[in-house]
Image (cartoon, rainbow, N blue to C red; front, side):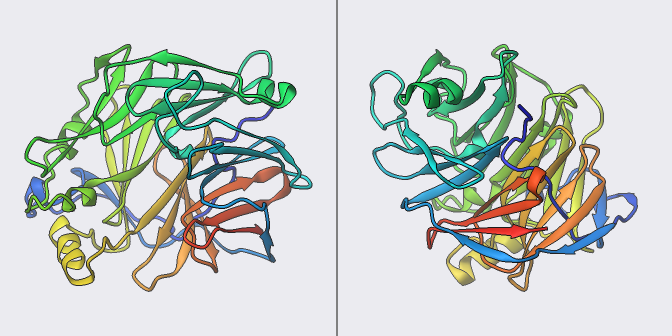
Length: 353
């Protein structure tokens, strides 16, 4: 069974620029840009998505989507079931699983596939590791659940990331989390390997960034969407409120920033926009990856949507323009299809590319 974490072939808008030392005039607290950075203003390939089809799954409250081999998986809001599985060929249902509660094989709340680890065992079974509110990891055996028509899962306790604002499972021994600082001005990122915190210069630098006010909202400007390659051991964090993607190797190699466009958006600018529009001006909206690429759903200043694709060294590959608003995406590369979800309208689209 081939492995596609969440997406499977993606795209990008911008072709390369040059490595340069970024502008250090801005305070470390006012930016999410590392010292080594690249400005990306065009992509080697620029693709328009093809024919568009609305996919009706007859479920409400859709939050996120993932494609794995012949399956489309959807997470939803509500008490449960909150995980739905469909045959990618004809969209027939393969079952609905996982309830909200305190019982065995239940979650404290709904989940996003972007925080999960999808992987296939040596026996060919599809597993999804779902972080459960810092309390434990629910390892959902999708293959056995479909075969038995009931939830087959086990939990692994953890106490290392309790009370984190964000938690992503990276592999069997590693996780990434963000924890809100006591003054509500910073998000403290950390990578844990066997419950031990790694000392990573790029993460230490990003942890200096802070917002100017403690209003219980502005700290969200420091959030981002994360992709990870188990084979490359590279973590990628795309900022929600700025046009910056940070590539952070876990093996000690230098980290670097990718800036979309000729100028990085500062946190001061992001805060001003939030005060004017009473909402976060969101640049990056969703992430997806496999071992050959990482990709991000991006909205530019004109409100246009596209999927930007990079290799794990941060080199731009391609951009795919998306005609409709979206909050999540995934790829079916075998069939050259891209799926986009708009959770505000519960609309799922399928495009050729």
